[in-house]
Image (cartoon, rainbow, N blue to C red):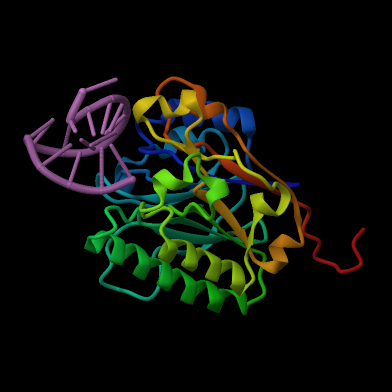
Length: 265
DNA sequence: ATGGTTGTGTTACAA
């Protein structure tokens, strides 16, 4: 079984104790991180490598930043989302590891919706759609996971009417997420668990965690070849309950063994 | 209570 997790850590340096204890406890094979908020030379590589992980990272000062951790060798790294060479924000990294192609994505937040921030979000999602469609034709075991900053439906937010105008719940945002699903991607968690009350993010303000005022905005999207292998998925709420937590908590999947032979053994 | 919290990196901005 191969475990792949995604986690927006909101600064890898501020979160390092939480990350190290979680890697010990959960021992995921592959981890897709977002909001590392650090340039590559200041990334705490040694502490993570000491736990047995290889690292691919795309850093940026203060904002954004994505990374891939893997217990296996990391190959063929892609450091940008194709489609706009003028985009300098570190929101995408992709690599091949343990017979899986994985991408860590940090979709722009997009608030407030009446500004160019929202236009940038929609354009970024359009780029992701175009690229993801091309990748599907390669028929790989492909997992595109991260902080999508998309609450796919009213089931995924504690107060749908209160968030109706927010960039995370906006119809244009949801439309683009649906386009990804309609291309053939599977929202891994939703494939296994229906109904309300499953969240991956709780705002720091207003005691949102204690009241369970959450949103499900961190997702693992699977190509058909990856969906065939899906064994389980879950949201690990433990890290969110600890001291100095990220406002997001890890979401994970388990994939069945990838057989190189169709005969299997 | 016209607010609340966290992180970066200088005191404003992003989430």
